[in-house]
Image 1: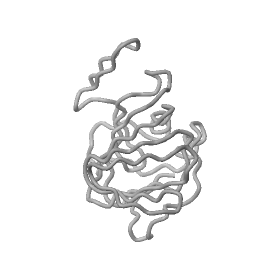
Image 2 (image 1 turned 180 degrees about the vertical axis):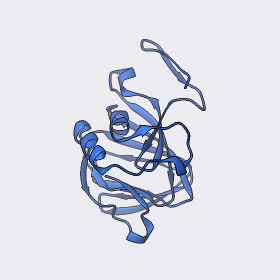
Image 3 (image 1 turned 90 degrees about the horizontal axis):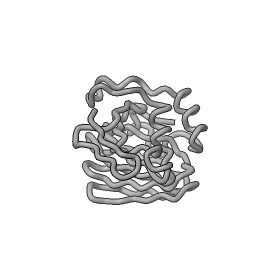
Amino acid sequence: MTVRSSHDTTHIVGPDDGEGLWFNGAHVTILVPGAWNDEAFSLAEVRMPQGRATGLHTDASDETFRVLEGELRFHIDGSDHRVVAGTTVTVRSGVPHAFIAVSDVARFLVLNTPGTHDRFFRGAGFPAADRDFANAPPPDHERTVAAAKEVGVELLGPPPFPAGSVRLMSG
């Protein structure tokens, strides 16, 4: 991993760099940790295989998603939304939401303000030596619950998607 950083001025992460983590079946690359900017924001790239879903939850941060590849289905405050590459979705803190990868692989950026979400990914996840989904460890519910509590993520229940469509879940 090659990350060049000066806390005072610049943080540069190359195209194949960043902190790689396995987070409940998804591959997360931390691009900008909240610690770099006094938790003003955090930025991560997430890759999820088809059927990987989050449970219904709320975040203590505003969360913005920019879909780079594939398709996701979001459930936000009781409404479903099909989201394809090129779409941006923002969810205010405290709003119940969940999402699932519909395409073979979905890749997106997630920006959290304030920037504590990288701590959630790290606390519930495991270091990733590669990006091969076959090497992802199984989800660890106890780690996820503990990490969620630490950063103010409230786990509300299972994914609100048809049971046959969910293959893996976080939370």
